Length: 163
Image 1 (cartoon, rainbow, N blue to C red):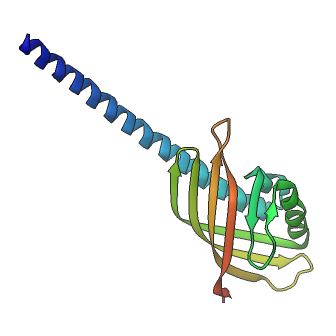
Image 2 (cartoon, rainbow, N blue to C red):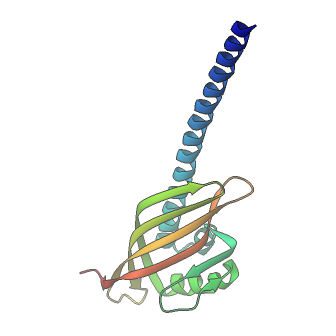
Image 3 (cartoon, one colour):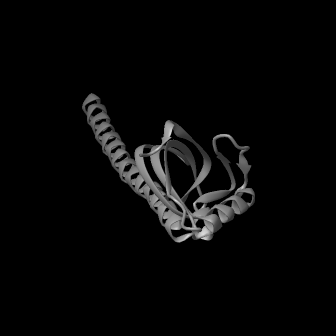
């Protein structure tokens, strides 16, 4: 009787360990896919800025997104953000380059910290201004499994104009 209990214990332990390592492996693969999807959103924002595509830019955000720029009130919701982006894209040719420093995925939420360099050239052929800064984004997983920016907060470096 004792020998069968010992054998049963070993089988349960082996099964539990196999399941545990299987789950860990799947979570790592899922996290890698999530990180890749979030990086794709930064690439999408870069493309949207360079092409002036307001719809593409806004598609990175949840409907209830909150964007907190320095020195201005927060834009609450995608529809409050829309006229700001339309105005910016109408007035300037833009180039936005991100360096993503860290991405963390925690269930249906994720965060990313990044630095950016943002170049603005007035469409009137004036001089280009390049600004450097930092950004913290909180992402929310959508019902279809995709990621969108839920909260975005950014600021400019103290000496924010790049020479």
